[in-house]
Image (cartoon, rainbow, N blue to C red; front, top):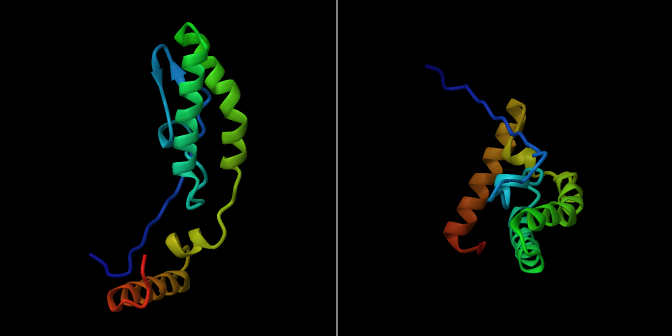
Length: 120
């Protein structure tokens, strides 16, 4: 048992295909953006919209799913390349100093919300 153990790992998987048969991956299940970019919800909503459009436009599901990937994949790939600004350094610090900064900022934000100074 130790008081100074810390571990954090963040990974991003990029799928070669988002569908197989009648099964489709949508949102983070298929194409999560880079961590802490704030694009996850956007990709899920736009992905659902594109998928619905392709299903409505095509007579069979195979053509619809191929169209979904063809139309939407370039957009997803651009969003997956977005690098978050300082967020990962706060949320996933790599050093003892980084952990101290992260903890201090989180405590300050927590205190500010409890006191009513900051409304989230």
